[in-house]
Length: 192
Image 1 (cartoon, rainbow, N blue to C red):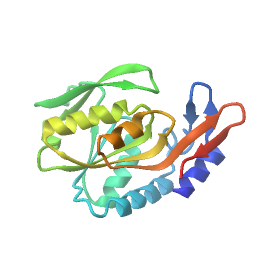
Image 2: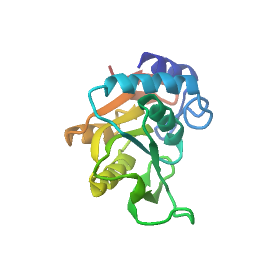
Image 3: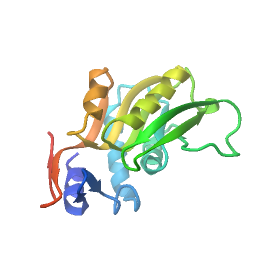
Image 4: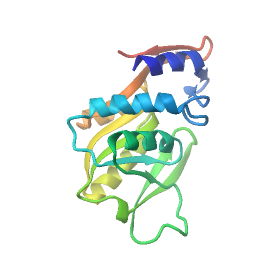
């Protein structure tokens, strides 16, 4: 998606340690108009899939997933990173290692909101190693849900996550795939 790539080039900052900072429009301050365009793109790309649920993980994926769910006219569910008193009943749970935070989270989805009748599109803001996706896929499989695809706003193509998931047969639709980035020059090269 050229508009997203242009926005990343204009407003993104490359930091050492393979960090791409896009918090001024994607994962802290949110450009909802851009999210709507991204949602329309995924709606077109997955027009052939019987999607009835959007799944993401807290926290940065929630804003994008909500807009995508509105575009598809289906509910959005987000996996929680901690148990809370308002999470009752049986749950699916897995562990996910966060690239961004460098720690392992217990991730939880209530069994009330995901089951065998669901055809899921998983949405997230970033993918590097694919650990979050693997955890969400594990939860979907445990629930008996059908994963129709994975929509990623920004994929770090130089990290193994996307390649691994595609090799496993998943339909991965990343709107911007960063091939390389240089913290010295702030140059970002995209895969096409």
